[in-house]
Image (cartoon, rainbow over all chains, first blue to last red; front, side, top):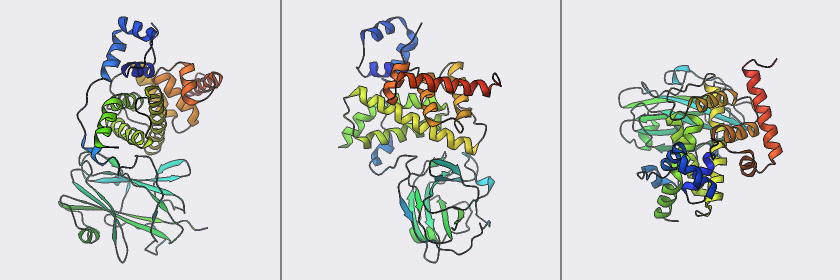
Length: 209
Length: 158
């Protein structure tokens, strides 16, 4: 038996149909099940409330990351800095992956130098922490973004940042916490990894022409 | 546009978006994220809600492209994608998903789009051609190339 496509069945479920599909459905339980599955009423999810502020997951809006703040060209790996163990995982300690979009290519950051025009995006597994702030680190740290992520699974943060031409390094701090932190408290959290606050640090070296 | 408009659009289209994303990815969490992303874009696109033909076509095209982005990103992170949370679908659909995941980083985007629509969603060549805005001949050519790529992957061709 040749079945209609899923697209044709979805359209049928929404009232855009043909006599041929209606005839097929009379005799095909599989296709009737497909139609029934897309007609099930769904409970309203909380994320609909913020839909006008929510950026699509793989959209890379051009938010310019501010002037770079540190001077080292070397990726600093110190307490709190990401390592292979910081790759996103759903359970255990919090973890993060930094995605880099260069042209049409999206890759996980592995320490390579970034350049002007690259966009970066964070995927975070909070492992039970309820609040997340992304801090641009420097002499005057500032919170770029804060959110209450789903504490139970990895989530790609909605904003992406496009690197401008300035500086030799970007220095970001991810601050996960049990309770909501003020911007000042988040900016003082560097290095903390305890039951209440967990930080992951990124130093992103720049490529120079 | 009001909250009631969002709710109505959600009830009308999200179930099919979710089902399509599950077919493409298998992984329930990833499929849910992709479905949300597709819906946010649909909301922002402000398409005429009752033009079902146009809206569903837009959904299929957009969700397919987002799924390819996802599979490519995952291919970078994990050269052997896991399918631990495989949901509905017969073995053939699972096999098709595995192949698409393996080919995601190598095959051209238009080939992947065409293969997803034809092999996972079961679109006929005329349907795929209309959705992608290409000729049926182009659809045939893309699918032939995709099949050749799979045959190479399986070692059936030199």
